[in-house]
Length: 368
Image 1 (cartoon, rainbow, N blue to C red):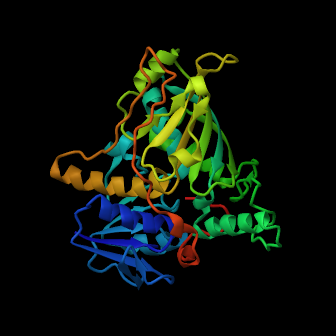
Image 2 (cartoon, rainbow, N blue to C red):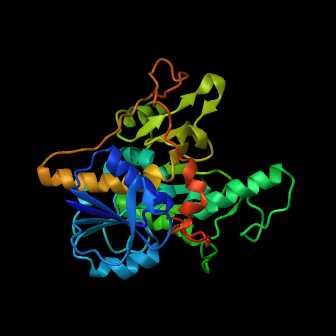
């Protein structure tokens, strides 16, 4: 299988390359494309992007404009990390809706929606989601490598008490701001509407009501979501924990005795989505509050795209390749910390470097 990564020098593209290599995806050749930028990614040469001839599988991680130009004329299987075709083609989180994989164009969802839905799906199957009110706390990586570098450089300048000409209309270091994607006439920004439409599509239920407030925070690469979810059926907290047992791709991270729950630092470099702080909302029947945190560049983007490819490949072989193991607190002691040892995190220090600026998303806040 001849595989290509378009946008290989960007924050998401470089992670796709690393994952394809580390997870031993069965490619015969792996070609990396970018318009400009560094000459190699993970020791592989980067070529100017001009053709998909001879490619069997193409990962698109260069933004909506590139996807819209190239995917319609592609003859190979395409997996798109942009928002260009999410409304019109299969939108896949493999742990949730791998049954929807079909055709030659598959799309990967918005990162914040993915981090919300990973722990929510199993609960939806049991109790039926009626309404979601969510607030997101989104990292710099969601706007690409350029904003990653901006946050690092501006923070350094702030701590050194020297002038810094920031590229946003306001300071980013030690600050946060409502998501600056396109503002619609109803007062919601594009990112918040993605949470609505993509949740309905992935859960296959257009009756679900969603109201989201998306916020960019001074965090490098892990998104967090605070969710208030009303269900159609009653439930208990014990049923919630049991429902999430052995769900691939999520981990409950809780130490209630120490008031310790998942943070973006905990989730950075991890494949799983961490969740916790499950509690029943006393102000409304059948309503659950929870907290979810995940690495935006991994399960929020690159890992999900690679898992889509893995599922497509293994489905052709008649087997399954969903990785991940989920643990929950024992029924006798939910104060214990539920967290497995992952080993040392990957080195992501290059994600804010000037070399990684090409093919990243611009600062209009479109997200991915």
